[in-house]
Image 1 (tube, rainbow, N blue to C red):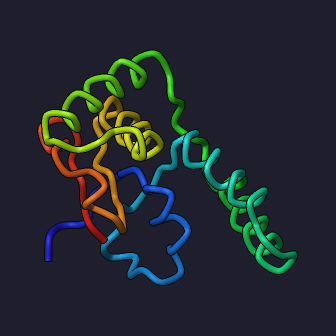
Image 2 (spheres, rainbow, N blue to C red):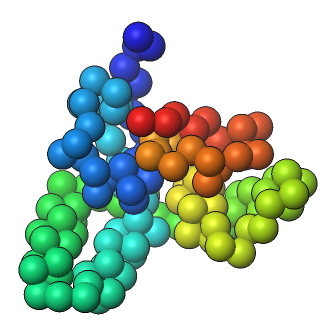
Amino acid sequence: MAERRQSGVLDTCTYIDLDLLDPAVLPQFPRLTAVSVGELHQGVVWARDAATRALRTEKLGAAIVEFEPLPFDGQAAARYGSLVGLTLAANRDPRPRKIDLMIAATASVNDLPLYTRNPKDFLGLESMVEVIAV
């Protein structure tokens, strides 16, 4: 087994599934991006019933308390453009991956690996962001 990393960015899906994951496969000090926190807010709004909304609100509340999100700033915006270019070069459509690419860009400019449950979402980006499947 690889050595556990000190820090890394959790993709939104990874944060949502934290209860299902072995902590040994995650960084010791996980980080979230502001983009992921936005996705969690979106999930609350899109809930189809009260029970789902309540569970998503709990997950969002925990994220707000436990994390100081990494911002999607000017550097991340520039890196996002580069990642869109890599996605196109890999013959993939960046449009349905906008949020994923913004999260990856934030991880990349902070020189942190990205931990995800959906590594296929990040194919072609290996030269600019380290993606770790969990």
